[in-house]
Length: 475
Image (cartoon, rainbow, N blue to C red; front, side, top):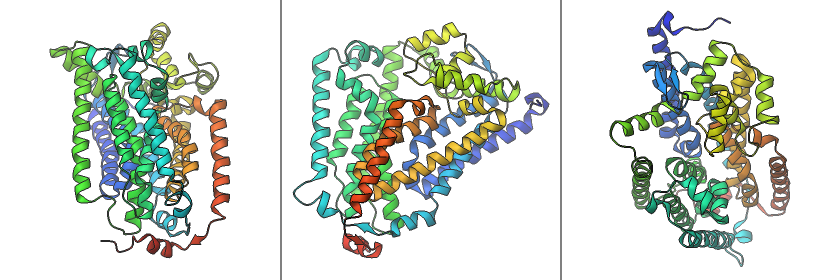
């Protein structure tokens, strides 16, 4: 196989790499600025894409760079070109699924009159959801205050707390937390689809979860994941108002308060990261700078570089072996088998297994695993297929949120989580597990049942439903 050599013309490769990365970064920034609703809905993906792309570009331009985790030098080279193209395919699929004509057609559909059936009458669905989630949060905090030391005050790693002191509710939160955050965001904005104010009780519950995560030693990754899932329904609500040319979702005062809360969250994240590196791990001076540069600039892109060298430069890939290790015989079937396979390929097996036994794993997985399975050509076909599936699912979820299909949204949440994690970390083994197939089947049955129930409700045309809600021309 003919390979591209950096030494053949480094200037040309540098220009191509910067141009490819710049095009993706400018496109995602443009989407976030000019279509902020999509920026919120896909924040989890866009942020991960941008960080990994910048890391791969850094290694390509300034390499050879030493990778502590791989224990070798990586770069320079043109690895940014295929990953930028893969990310571009996902962005194109998202823009196609959420093209303006299709979004307008979604909001032009008639909608059943549901306010008298699920809210405003004798049964308030939001109240039931609040008391249920509130009970969980209160008991979770009680468990923290009575089960042992609080990690942030004792310098304990979050993994050690979970292993030694974390109770059943703590483990439940760690496993299902982002999905709970999505539900809280959904109920926060659900009243806005009927022209009622946002239900900030759910915002308070979300804030309490973020504070809990800080106290038990979590850092950036947890805050990022929880916040990303929380803002997905908010993005859908903004999309609805922009499409129907209604008044903004939040008033200027609310936006100002949200900005303040966001600033506090950023300070909390920075504080958590600094505390972890400087207090829990004891890094300082040059060592602290080295560790941070590795974490920020190298670790996000190092696994892609390992795959790029094997698949694109040495043509050393085996799709059948990759599929066997990912789907049939992973080191730990209960975890992300993609990263286990990639770590086994990049490291001596004994060292990879030791790291995995400690409960840790490296960053990456997507699109590495797709090229490990399909090679330098078939990998792009797998990327395109997965991008279409992901984008169409997100449009389906958007439709369910807009139409207030609360039961369907609830049962689709695990599927949402699996797809999001796949696009970011390449986790594929969850899709062949019996539990996932059961979740998918239940979600489909609930969708059909809810659709049949909604068919018994009176239907308002789109124009009438907008005026009924009092939204058109609202000040």
